[in-house]
Length: 281
Image (cartoon, rainbow, N blue to C red; front, side, top):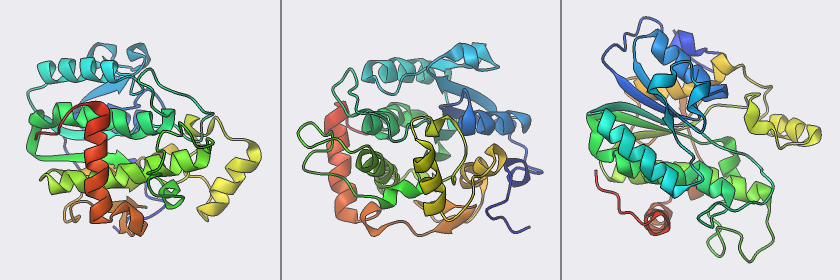
């Protein structure tokens, strides 16, 4: 069966038995993350939802509190996860925000860069020693990475006027640069554009902006089932080149600035400096 834009998550995992597999999904209380968790559990995986409010997960006992906008929260979650899980097979760095009003985290970071990248970078660094040899990391990016590369002169918009779309765009480029950096460190990882899905991610957009986003992607919104298909395909499909950018359950071509080896190295070093931790697999 050929997979594509209309493929659903259930179709991707049809006939797949995930009993014995351990997965972590961030942003799992609703939207894409919630759908990814549902399908993984339906196929037997042991899934830990890493969410800001663990009570919102149907398996509250297994959920872990995680606020990606706080490095202290990420560190605490990392400690709890590594203590609980001797092995991790799948890590879905899925949580994210989009085009938010200007805001700073408790650590002084621009909110979108902190939530979409830096929190996930630190979490992955903390969990890296627990990743199984054949584990996969799936980073949720978006077509928004085409907007801009890293705004090197002021990535946290501390001196430049804040632009919510440039901030979003660089955070999505960050997801792909991060993926390529993981590959350089012998971790299997893919960056996935799930498509335009009507979730809480769009809550900060005006109606005209939402229409523009759909027009820019040249497609109508996907259902949650369709949106969750590509991340799950990236997690289980055989033969995907390591470090791929994936859209519509196919390997696609990202913007050149998101895979430039010089940018990958520079951004990795910057990320380690920001979170105060070197990455050791």
